[in-house]
Length: 313
Ligand code: RIB
Ligand code: CA
Image (cartoon, rainbow, N blue to C red; front, side, top):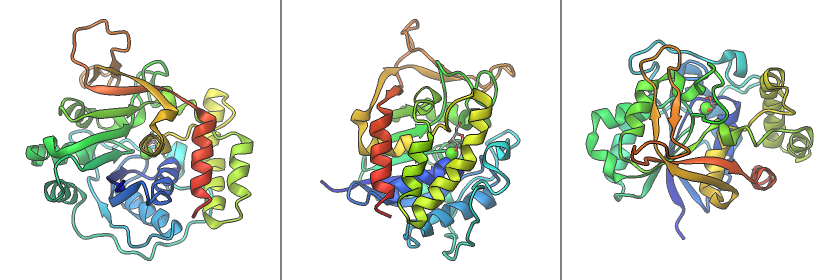
């Protein structure tokens, strides 16, 4: 079967970096048409630089990386250096990327690619705020029916918020963008905190990366070492949730996950619950189902897949 064509939209972020490595280590299944950077965990200049660092770490300097939106549609950018560090990829010493950034704007790349590829052949994989995706849909409404699926990391229901009591970071940063995406009619699969908080980087799991003896394994171990301190302190958990790699793992091995087709709407007005994904998990409304909301995962199976693939790099 031909590899699935995807565009990864990302705000690296240590967990984004692991997700990109997982995708680039799986060329038989995934054809990464391009990586589009968005402002999120850290400002755009850093996310666009970090995406290139990761491509070079994967030995794939030919992957096209584009810079996209540097701020949410209408709001001021909120970043997460408190989680990811000043560079967005704190932990190991970082190389300076040699590969160039594409000159085309990420949103134009997304629009052009969806228009050029056969309808229904490209999946969008947002790992950060949805600003680039929403801007592309606003600028070119004709692409919506041509997008095969959007598989995104974002939102929360049972797990509630991680940046406010009610909201998950990716949705909170640009709730208007999320509202546009969730109302687009495009098939959406959501990997929320409900599932990502079940794939924690325990000591043995991080050791498995270190034991690979490769540069990729070492970097992943040092990124997760750094990244986990925030969640361990806040939740008292035994490790960090590997949020974004869940998106790629879903594409590679969907049977590792379980979810429900439900209605999900985004709070965009209340200051108290801004960015909340109001997920009708129990079907108490008659609102139409618009998303496959993932709630469970085989964590050991997830890490077996992730470790096996990172070991290939
Ligand atoms: O809330 C977790 C999400 O926010 C992840 O995508 C992480 O990288 C940050 O972007
Ligand atoms: Ca991210």
